[in-house]
Image (tube, rainbow, N blue to C red; front, side, top):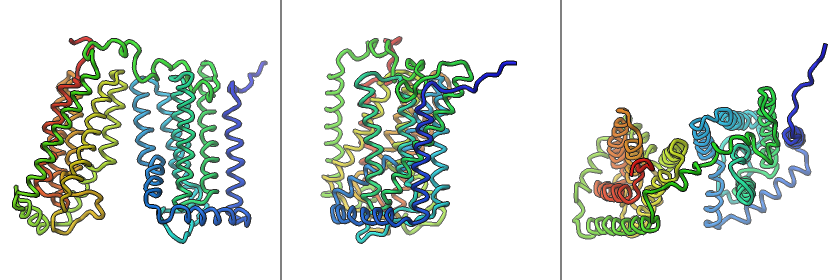
Length: 467
């Protein structure tokens, strides 16, 4: 009777990652739990020196906050789910499942380990940021190395040469910057970040090893995941666009002319929006469209139920929700159409909206309504409403794409959020005392001009088989 040896992966990298990462994490965990004096000394000394380095430097702190944002749960889950959605639409279900399982494991590991260790956050002389929960290991560092590491393993087959090297360098630098930012902001010790990286590498090794074993059992060639990626044969499906679609584009023979037209339209529309704001604030008399009476009436009729609902719709119009919607829209259309046109259209809409909002807000510089505000520490002026402009561009832009590409009756259902969301977000922003009616009107003016201009110039619904 013959026996078969258990399947082995072709590469020892996953086993090496598991053993090395687990060993380093175990040593750090033991040292932290026992409060080993040399480690405690290094941790506290570095925390104090880093705090002295950044305290009082607002620009440095702002940059660090932007960097650490790339390791937040919202960003990591948005990137992971959007990538998994692309893979599922490309029928690469194993890779999509790998991303979700790997990311989900990191999500579970972080709170479990923190609760078991129970280490307090650093206490520094001049706090510049605040973290919630326990300190060991760093959740941002763990999530970033798992998320970006898994994405690198999945999409490596779609790159070659210098592009592959650049992608790996970018992932390593981003993970390192996120970890260092947590130390500089004073919310984690050095050992917290090192422990997170160690357990993250171990978890990546475990999931990669499991993926390789499944491939071996199903008769597929085992690979060297770090060098070749998890599924080298999926190269064609992992590529962002199809090769034939990239060269067969008969719609825009002169893309620079289109870009010039879009830029010209944006400048003209920005002038109209800014001019309207200046006209209202300088010469409007203070009560154009009920700028004085409407905020006061809404503030006087607030109820707990309405306040709760206004918070919901205000959040749906905020930066993070709009970013998630925009990225998801780009991911779905990129996976389905295999073209960049729809992605560029969404990016142009949202970047144009953000630039308009920042410029118009700086020029008009309008104060918020003189009523109690339900949102605190808003960084910009009242005119125009960034929530309203972003909501219009995101939801109406989505409806334009779906109606232009789909052929079923269900496509018209996307008109419901395209109409309802701008109304609900506008009402919530005025109810919460953050905007005058003319602030909303300025945003609607921008959307009413910007959306048709971008659509007619870029033609996101154009197809190669339909001249």
